[in-house]
Structures are given as structure tokens and as C-alpha cells.
Amino acid sequence: MDSIKTLWKFIKNARYLKGMMRKTVATVVSVENPHGDYHVIALKPAEGFSWNAGEHVMLRLPDHEAVRREYRIFSIASIRQEGILLFGTRTGKEASAFKKVLLSLKPGDPVSMQGAFGWFRIRDEHSPVVMFAGGVGITPVRALVKELAHSQARPIHIVYSSSDFYLFGDEIQNIVDNNPSMSLYKVSAREEVQERLAELAVQYGNKAYYYMSASPGVIDSVAKLLRSKEISGSRLIDDTMRGY
Image (cartoon, rainbow, N blue to C red; front, side, top):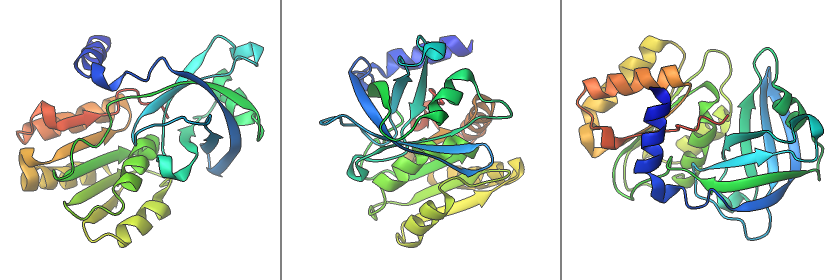
């Protein structure tokens, strides 16, 4: 059922996938480990490479035999003006073979890339925006927040849930503190997430777009809640790739 739903989203959002087959080579700038099993990877894109906030890329490591035929899709956490491609990821208790190689790369090492593509993007310049991020799902949300950092034409709310560490949390808080149209709610319990999102759904209804970036189960739960508040499916935008 999940694969059918994902396929339907691809078909429905085909216009957002036109960059999927573009191939380039990026180089590693840095690989950092800010907390626990959280990692932040920065790549320098090829000259002329462009992307929209919230899009994804497909990464390959063909120079490494153990994972030469593998690929992973990652959500981009940065915007073009920053000049780098930024990714946030977690390894869990045991990193996959692909992530072990990726996280061992040194500055200057090449990474093959396809994209950018994806529909987790800002839709217009006037609708209220409600963003929900669960854990490392903050990765593409960080890009949207950066994109909207100076926008004061509409209310922008970020509900950020985490049980242990708020990746990019201080940076996002600083952006919110400097934009009176933005609000940030850091929560940890499921009940807090549901309560806050229910309040926002009642407040804005179908005037807002609702962005959801988290694990599949959490996204399904949040989408169910929003639909129970009569939010139309056309106003729900989720990070189906979930590449973190």
C-alpha cells in the first residue's frame, strides 16, 4: 500500500521531478558529528548546479567498491545562497555500509549526484505555512525556514519534535527571533505535537499549507490528525523521500 501511495505521489507531482536525471559531481567540504549519531555533511556542488529549497538529490559513491552500485536519496538542508549542499542524517545504533563510507569521506573527495528534484517546496507567496519536523526530519525544513527567513507577508509556524537533540535548533531559533511572522514550538511528547498542530489546523484551516517531514509512521499519524480537522489533502505536503 505504501509503495502504491508513493507511486501516485510521483505521478501527481511529476512536474517537480524534471531534474531527477541530471548527473553532476560534488566534492566534500566537511563531515561533522554535532551530537550522538547525528551527522551533518557539506558538499560543494558542481559549477552551475541549482536547486530549490526542500528538494532532494541522489548520492552515489562509485569510487568505493563496497557500495559502488548503491545510492541513497538525501534531503537538502541548505538554500542556493549558502553556496553549499548541506545534509543532516542519523546512523542509528549501526550505520549502513553506505553511510559508513559516506561519513568517512575527507574534504575534496568526490561524490556522484543526481538531481535536484522533489515537491517539498513552498507553493506560493501568501498562504500561511505550518511546518512539522520530527527528529532529523528537520533537514528539509531547515531549507524552507532559510528560504522564508525574511518573509513577513504571512504567518509561518514551525513545530519541531525531538526526544533528545534539536539538530539546527539554535540556528532556526535565531531566524525566528528575527522575524515577527515566525513562531517555533520545540516539543518532545506526541501529545504536545498533536495539540499544537490541532490548534494551528483550527486556526488556519485550508488557507494554510502543512509541511510534514518525519518517519513514515509519524507522518501518517500527523496527516490523519490534520484530515480529522477537515484539512484537504491538497494542502498537505510531505517529504515522501524521507532522505535523512
